[in-house]
Length: 275
Length: 325
Image (spheres, rainbow over the protein chains, first blue to last red):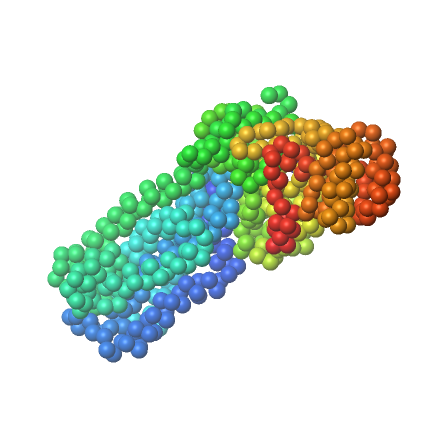
């Protein structure tokens, strides 16, 4: 045996809050080390939005129009950022389902660490990764000729994108604890894809059939898309409906609603693990 | 409860209508390996998950390392290690990164977590593979890393839930070696298993669980004695000979022999061992019955299990299939 005794000593030297934060940071470190060891994962996650921009921007681009005028590619870029944030919940769900089916979450729960750190650490990791993704995507967009307004508007748009991503972490955690295996989590993409199509991400809702346009306008991601377009100074293409006229407000409100719905669901699912 | 690292009385756990644990009792003496043996669905994993604070109990009381699991789960977690049915390690990280992460989460602090990781890598013979991703590890290496992770705090009590399920025989041997080393260091181990051989090899005491209840608790030898002493066993070459051999064995031993058609075996309890063996052998030779093998054997835990529960743990073929997987 070792000369050193390996007992639970740290617990006594600091309070609960200190350890909750320390545990959270250690879970974040783990998540970031994953990207450090497999940097290609970021490329996979960004491959789809970049490919979408190339396809929609250049293949369909000339056939697309933006109500109220403006370049379609400029209209599309903020949509691409929103789509990446929206699909982010699949990444969250994939990691959570993997950890829960492989027993990693059980191991964490059998340890004297703060239970909150398991989920909070995931959330912080996802937000850090989202910042990295947005930076890469914005540089890509810049290279393709997108020229946003700078200043506070830019920062505001960036914050609204993260705000949406934050709200969807809870959807991801809930789904990750709900679906039975990692393969099923991959299947979430098939559900998420049409949900982002029926929005203002690719096409302005007012160009759609009436009923579909209403659905698209009320899609939470549409509000974030319209609000960030406005703040970036890109073409907005909004219609006359109330929800489209109040995009900035709704881009703030929708994530609150999503969080209010999915945090309790995720927490309840997490507590069910103890049953 | 003095001298017991794990003590459970009247444990109850219900899932809807099903009683997963129905008044389960368990006492594990400090510094021993205690086997918890039972078929699939008997309640082994439920018991371990309650004792390791992963799920709440519905009734009864459980003490681990002197602490009540229901009242002080967080303190219990500082004194236990758990290795579940899956190797619960991070597949993307390296072995070293895994142990350092878990060490920090056990609140050792960065530098001590590093030192502890180094120590454990050496102890579990993983130093050479320390900086490879766990995704590239063999099943046995993963299990050893998993064991190392559950040993970070040198826990008073280690729960091993079917630690060798799905491993090939060589990896299984490696895990057994590690468990023996841990116990030599003073850790108490509660080991659940479906493999009777594993319980026989490692445990100094065994609790047999069936339908959520402890139906026996004894040393391996004591359990074997409950099904009677030694048995004489004859293996025949042809299935048609089974009844003739059974008659001979019955006449000599004056007991009702059991015939196992599948294995072509006939066996019966004996008291005067050598005399019975000679007599059976001579009679069979005189009658000209061809015999593959004849001998005396101690009852196996398998016999105990069959005797206690009326069913086997599982068929030998599924054991082999699992080992190959």
